[in-house]
Image (tube, rainbow, N blue to C red; front, side):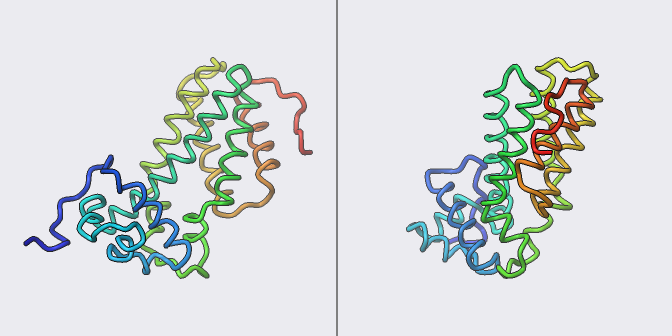
Length: 208
């Protein structure tokens, strides 16, 4: 009989238990820290066998990646919804997208657990948001560039990509260390982006 560690890694889609396992891992990390997350504990919380957890997830490192990917999907979903609601107004779309992301981050258990030492979070998860964040940034920026291009601003694709890179990195900075309310931060970023993209902004700053 194969050992648990020899179980085949799960596919990114997984089976019916994959999402509940990832959700349980996020909640357990926020509550007790990353070191408390074990396949046995997740099996107990979800009500499945340990082998099922290994089959669905693969390894603890794969679990960490799945947790971050799960949260990224949530963030990209609110961004997409913001642009869908403001198809004719790029400034409003960017304002709502940034505000929605920051509001979601403010109530995000995984990011709070990673950012706060009081939760006892081990450093294993941190590289997924720092040194290994390239994939996450690429996905977010690719989506946003495509969205902004649809408004046909008077910039080249490369120039739009520069603007989006600045916005995404600034938003991530505010996710980890907010300096103002989500609404005020979103207002400021939307105003700056609009000026660079050549879009009229009226009023200049709604929260001035």
